[in-house]
Length: 130
Image (cartoon, rainbow, N blue to C red):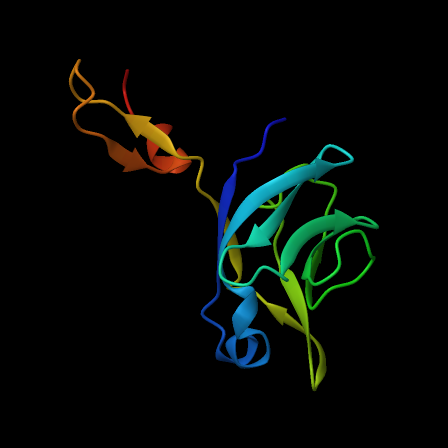
């Protein structure tokens, strides 16, 4: 299974934003390990999304069994699992609003000379009648 090359991590949880504001944002695929993609935050080069020990993590060290934000999963792609948990001063909390959305970069070329492009998400592309 090929996972998308770009992700957008969002949350409406004020508590998560207070504890880990740097973990939200756009991530770009930088490699693959064990068949699962590894992503790096485009705003902070030291934050990664990676898989290990039966969980997806958002944290600083690729390949370790730990991170600030995590979810147990056997999924090959990180966008599928929910809910996510995160570490705070109050212990481990659950964020039911955290989402990891894929941006697969599908493009539609509306005319034959490719002078215009429209960027659409993978979800939008699935609803197009060809």
